[in-house]
Amino acid sequence: MIAAAGRIRRGIGVDVGAALDLVGALVRYLALAFLFPAAVAVGYDEPAWPFLAAGAITAGLGWRLEATTQGKERVGVREALLELVPVIVLFTRAYWRA
Image (cartoon, rainbow, N blue to C red; front, side, top):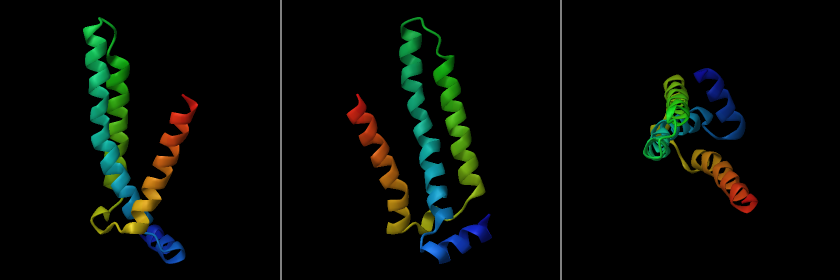
């Protein structure tokens, strides 16, 4: 996987492996956000397992992505844009749909 990421970098000038490593680290920590709706569900005597399961799946996928890639320490401007622009577009679409 590392060799393939190196070939991609030479082709497009972006370290895709480093960008994916950074995405994995961010997703792993953002999985903690599922604890808040779980606590609210418990407060309203509703089942909290869907939130806890989704948080566990998210954390597991983020951990796995971070474990299979490397290089988040060398992320540059191009890699950050590769990661952040799609997220901004998705949030904008979700905002305008509401």
